[in-house]
Length: 83
Image 1 (cartoon, one colour):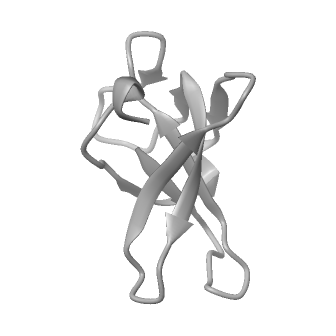
Image 2 (tube, rainbow, N blue to C red; image 1 turned 90 degrees about the vertical axis):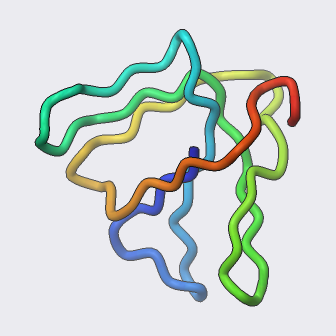
């Protein structure tokens, strides 16, 4: 999963990548929710704006993202075994 935070620009990137798995959490009602991703990852973005998860942060740790800071969420293929 790649989360774009409010205020993201190419000059001032605000992207958080992470693995959404069994130890992750997000609400299930049709309103904004905080997200917890079980493993933090770096995000690479090319000159065309294509984003990919680059690698897991070592040592592995989760990341909490407040709903009030989320502008966009992208689900990307792959999982912890592919990083």
